Length: 185
Image 1 (tube, rainbow, N blue to C red):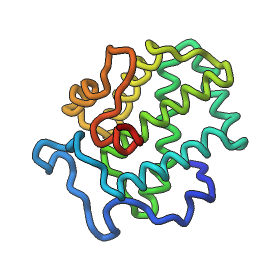
Image 2: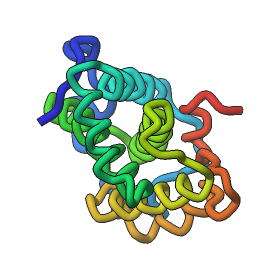
Image 3: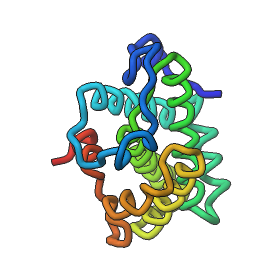
């Protein structure tokens, strides 16, 4: 399904080694710890996803169809931003998990929000539609719903994620470990 640059192929995949299984969030008391520092493996996975998403969004072979998708969603920019961000992430996730790797929930969410930002930037650069704070906040809400529907996050975690993302404050804030992964202070 996805188009991943050669830069991503052949690189070691982050996460649980093959043959071992990570516990589900439901099996871990309290679920994921959104405030913990990222591990070196999580930081590496985030950086590789960042490179892959930039490649997908900006390579000639993939950028044209993505821009066309954005144009088709001009009537509901928040919805199309969330859909395109999820589509880009799904291509990367398929490549990583298809080769036996895994991605922690913190990295998934950090990556999704980073991809959403890059997608919004692409929409603005190409003058497809403007992305103000309101559109961005709505896109984040849509992305959280799509991620929950896809089983990437539990619905029980949604209120905590939304609170940590600073919803309703005009600007999303990365969550604890995600802020560190994204290079924040």
